[in-house]
Image (cartoon, rainbow, N blue to C red; front, side, top):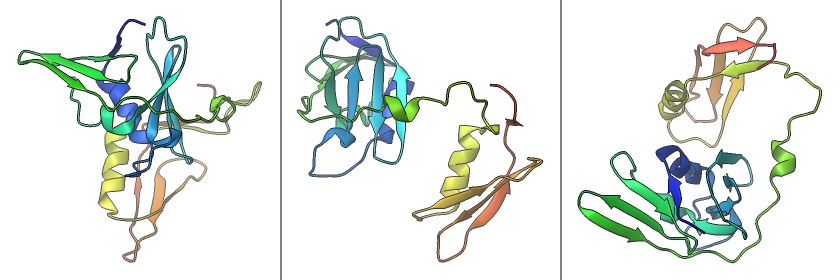
Length: 178
């Protein structure tokens, strides 16, 4: 397999994995398979297409290998042994936590949209706004979003002792096709 070139968005997939320390299983790894990177934590799943040319056997790379790499000015490559090689003006850096021998769940059924059905509603949110909403509620285990017809704003409440709540405007909303 030739090295897989990674972008900043590819590296971001690792944020969807579990961050459990001291325990290594499939859900705190990025699953590298033909044509895509997959990350899941049991509550959510993220997939990103990537040119993998020659990945015959999928493999798992620990989350910590991806974290802390900043590809803005660097060239980043993922290798079959699970290492990431970062090249910049200062030279090369190799981050190698190996690969993990674990089973990875089949996420395809989760990602399949109902065939022949249109979404009931489609909402586009700016990631910066969503991050700001989540940052504004502090430590919580849950943020609930409320959508009313006609959709003018999205209301939210956080499960915090301070009862954080608010509203924000979606970028777009439509009950129509994507």
